[in-house]
Length: 169
Length: 169
Image (cartoon, rainbow over all chains, first blue to last red; front, top):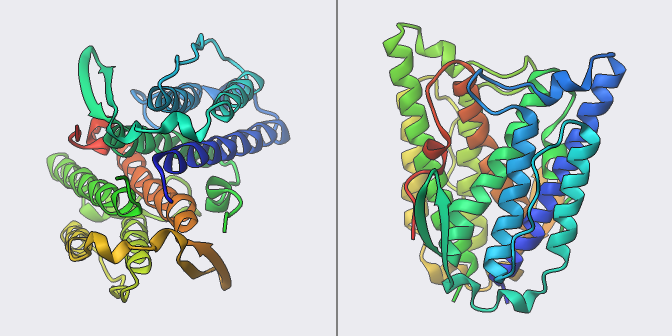
């Protein structure tokens, strides 16, 4: 039977794994053309958009916050101090490791659970299902895709298969 | 009870509705600064990436193909001849109207259904659940986000709330 756990944990792990791979290609590209990593890490698509580092921070925040709230466990706290590819990779790995600690039964009743988050200083209320489908999922994909687009726009040779990752069957 | 239909149809409709809104803002922006619509419609983030029109075509293709295959109905065929914002809006509206014809019971058994698609001339096999979670969803969000990023990079004043749309609760 298809469950909210199935719709949440594996897809987020997949998105983060692909994000890690995309960043690795970005780092290799910077090395190959001898540019400072910080140029890519601070690149953005428009002056008032977030730079790459922040995109990765938000993608991981949305993933850990989403899974923790749906499972009813404490959200791991990160400091948002990353300045290198290595540190971003560690943040992604830490998030995936957290997702791996969550068992399917911790999602029992998650679809109807009341969840409140604070968005730009306003409390927003969701049922678990709406929280996953209209908040967590689109946000994670948004920030992973934007990371991809920032790197792509700067010349990193990525293709959509890198974003999608290996296929399940 | 949470179903594959819930995880598919409403989120895709939401993504397409937000895509329509984002394009409307792009069109208004072009008019406000007196640039030809075709400049934005053919904009891309890197020379070998698809332009905006193609991003919208693929987002709608993935949506109609995804829902049709999971429901076991024929996939509506579109001609890919759009050259204006109005035509892209019509394509999105047509896709949403198609999604609206599908009833929850048409998704009975969809999660374990065998689905085969042809990707770059190779047959790829999925169960319905993997097809939704590792193919349809990431693809639709990828192309909607990339449309957003192309417009944003060209100066359209969009914010993430435009991408996320009104919140469910």
